[in-house]
Image (cartoon, chains in turn red, yellow, blue, purple):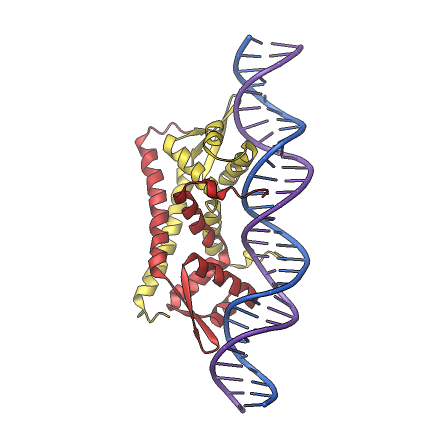
Length: 114
Length: 114
DNA sequence: ATCTTTTATCGTAAAAATACGATTAATGTC
DNA sequence: GACATTAATCGTATTTTTACGATAAAAGAT
């Protein structure tokens, strides 16, 4: 894109979009599911489950860490990841308030939809 | 990406990721908000509110239509868009079940997090 | 000390997303 | 019919994302 216009939007809109972007790839959804299911996951276990190269998985993990959704700690040669529930809840309520707000507003007007 | 591996994931994961991608840009969040607030919107009204060129807004509108989140109808020279609540609700419950499932699983195991 | 295992990072290639101006198409206005 | 308005589409440039192999770094095993 010639220029990045993203910063010209409202903070709440940017935040929700960033939240969404964090889980906008099936690999990252799958990673979150895998970690949540076992409460925590060794990196290698995740790599085994996904149809992607190790370096690619590492890349996706990094993005989830950057988004704050997961956190990792080193354990010997291995790397252990777990969900950051505080941020995860923030995500969940962010989506919820978006969906609910939209819905409420629409219900208060007579739906003369196109 | 050298190859597209997205189709190798589970259907539910792809679906959630696609949902997320649809609202992963602040422009599209802003568009949805604008339409929901007024129940329906002329394309030109949306263009006025956003810091983007008309053609770019049209592009974002098209993506939202493709995702099923909104639908448009032509009214003379103008174009009217409204939320497709059926799909919108599907989105909302998709996110909810993802967040809730993850949370429940985690609570059932002792959180010996990293 | 050497070799293996594990994971992060680097470099890079290919693809997708974002953004715009110009053009087109279709209707409305004079 | 000529001109204006509105919005979609086309072509294109730039940026970002996705993906991989190769390499590096750090700990474990022999």
